[in-house]
Image (cartoon, rainbow, N blue to C red; front, side, top):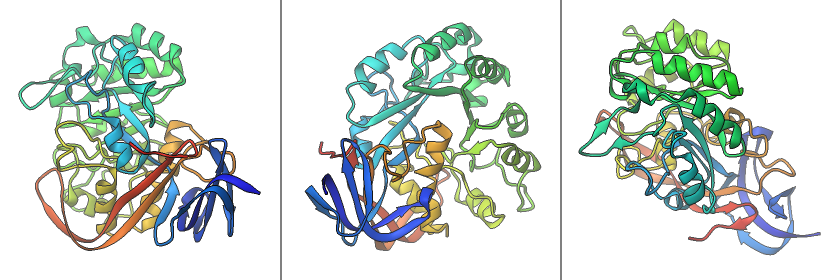
Length: 374
């Protein structure tokens, strides 16, 4: 049988199926058709010496490009190895229609959103102006958020809320409590941003339910998940046991090597690794998803586990069984990567540097069964 497209001879890493082997991946009609040896295709790409994974999913991005000051061009992130971008709260119910019409629908790369509980989304985020949208409770829009989410279930995965002194000033847990009501009413999960108190990490976690995502989960002090003694906060352990999903969300100020070392030393790996790439961190310290993944390889996480955090696990968080896997019939997405060896300087959000010997780089992506070129 001749397939539409075959990626030949790459090291296929698909944690969803426990696969790490040299083989071919075939696509037909925009979907995964087969895995195996000696597959033939109308178009064949030589992937020998490369790593081939299910299309990488960046669970935390900001790609309302031109509609918000923090948005970046989604095509830049696709060229960086991603096939699915999850925009986390750039738009709220008041401007989601514009995001959908002008960015999501025209984009060749898949974009899924968490809708901000704030009516205007993240509207005041730049080098000169920083206004936390959750700090003005007049902008909380539960009725509108329910209506917009129900009308756009094909593109909205959940509700985003940002709490902490920077995002919500003195509002404490009130925005989170409102988001909780909306998420429960519509039957979708929340993604919760946490920065410095108030509220405390414990106050946030107690309000989260199975399937909710805590982003910025390895943030530095304060509101770090690690204890001063080098352990993990009991509230964090309890939340994981309860089914809360822990996502990195690197960003401008939300990832610490110190925290990561402590958490990994305690056997607490992140469920999802995401970049939180936006206009203020795309040139550092986050850069992109592959740079963020590379940092965890340099911290000692096994490659297969790192790939899982950007394929199978975010797909599960999104409740999208068609993504993050090479199972037959799944979305025809793939990322073609190289694991480079050398001396690479990595930096976290606190300014700490780490020299690593490995780095993932993008060599190409397949989106809906076709080579992405832009």
